Image 1 (cartoon, one colour):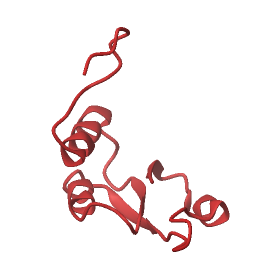
Image 2: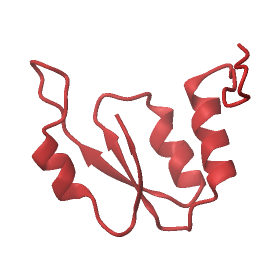
Image 3: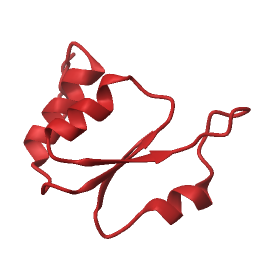
Length: 84
């Protein structure tokens, strides 16, 4: 895939994309990433390999969406990303 403004990258997998994102942004060790319970099993492993802490976010089983109030309560000064 190509984007005329140069802001897109095609990758082989979500795992590759998350690893690349972590490498490029180089968040400080111990930074928190909020991740949903419904996720690719390797995502927490990849985040931990980059020294990041996974903060679990439950989803509503009927809508598969997070509760905005719950998400807001999980955000701290250490939060660098939310993967939903």
